[in-house]
Length: 309
Ligand code: UDP
Image (cartoon, rainbow, N blue to C red; front, top):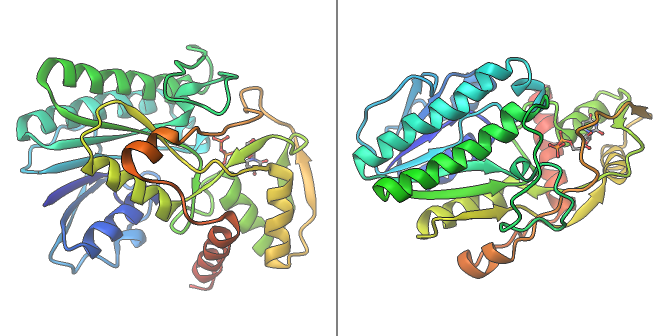
């Protein structure tokens, strides 16, 4: 089985590639290293089943391939807001180019969509049938509307050419290989706590999120790719926690001297995000297994290790 993983050097990509290589599969990693490091893939470069192509997904690609895992896109607001026009281009042109490749090669195609497509919808927990509520002209629209357009493109390729698509709506995920300066809450808090720097809580910290450990998420993606389901499906963990409790938990686990401080909260920050994962349970026989306690311990160990190196 020959796999193309776009964004393969990034957080989800590298965790997926590890699993595929463990299974003895061939992997081509496509990444322009804009929000990832070459160090992430250094462990694979001498593996004969691994090949790296340094290229942006905006440039079309023509290779023989059986499965395409299309993950490439800056995913943290810190990165995708640096150049929002480029973000829109990456999402549209990248998805278009890779869908064309999937159609030409008769390959299976999995698109990494996002819980961001639900926008400010207040229906909770979020269900696949919820069509969302997204501001088309806001700062984050490049990403939110981009992912919505990309889902639409996948469905049109399926309706027009019967391209073998899958759409995963990925909720907050964390774990090893996150960049410490990714700007996401778990990587920020762990990095701050390890360095005894103030832990930056946006707003009063009463907003909640549900965090999925990356190993669980990758298992979900693999199960989805192995299925024949063509419509969007939520993948995430539904164990909810306030951002304040998360900060407190991480500080205690690290035994840190950090103080908790409150920063202003941005207007598009959501008060709650929680996936309904019943569809994934029924269709894929998938559900997250790793608790937040366990997952945080593994992630903290990872951050401590990379700090020493
Ligand atoms: N957050 C925070 N401090 C940080 C980074 C994030 O309090 O240093 C908050 C952020 O405002 C949001 C939550 O943590 O309410 C989750 O943020 P993240 O960017 O990880 O994910 P998303 O907002 O996309 O769910």
